[in-house]
Length: 437
Image (cartoon, rainbow, N blue to C red):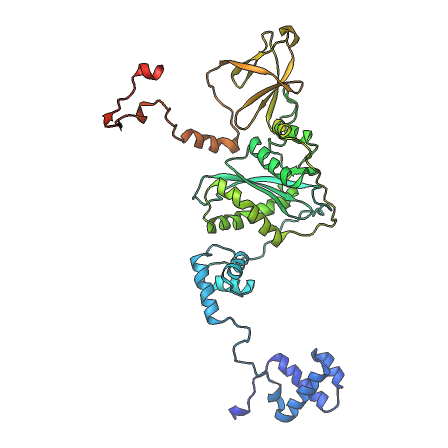
């Protein structure tokens, strides 16, 4: 009696009812095919199986058998071993890319995700209600708008010094245009990153940033200065507009990219065993190329709005310097950062009294004093004692790290010769008179 019992799914029961009606001509084969969502040829196949074996002929013969698309046990085990040994903190998408590209394992993203869930390496996330922000359409052309932001993060995961990453992303295509690792977010670090950007791509129409004081003077009704930050002054000289976003959500594209970089780039640096800023900057172009291949989109227009950079190296050095205006005294002296500079000139001194000059400081600390765009000769007249220094919050850790570094002994320090021998004779430490002379 048990042999006469058949186990059928709901879909198979519906199929049995339709085929029975088609078998007694209560339904046309075309109508049965439309109801079942199959071809008329397959309906004739089902009718033939029903006439030969009855209802048993309509039951799937794959029931209880393993799927033809199942993972091979050896491939699954290899994936599990690699996920535990190398990619234990990777997300399913990034782990899937590494398994396919580095280890030639042909697995789907969902297969990797299910394996990671089963192994306890990934926790499924419930969908959360997202905050709704009005979407802004991408710009049509590359170079019209470039979003800029920086992120202080543990990019080397404790293997190297703490640093920040400056990110430049094109709004139209989503392409990474520039990545620059730097000890901290400063005006000079943005100068260096922007200079590299201009050398590779040319001048964009506008940079889109936050309201950091590097990009915008945030003191209303300031009594001194030009009302423009050093970076803003340099971009004005290059005819590049700076637009500041009112909220982080307004520049969401670069914010989301930084979030992705904090996952992907950190792991790529770990796999490459990179732990220094110099090595990370050398690796950045390779990472940018791979990132853009995966995630960049085609802009609506093929026109590139970048403009050529038609400036000499000397002109760029002047533009990307820290500049402040000073008035010469009657003695042709100025004070800048607690140092008094004496102007040396062959012309009559009265011709330069009260003249407005521009002090240009390079990242190396080199000073130039310009009058009507031309450099003036000078000597250092007096250095004042070092006083309290104003440091921004983003530069505080970098400043403290610099202070914590041990100072290098001078070339004539007694430590360098103490207890050493030359040609069999003991070298005595130099006396105080020798050092002073």
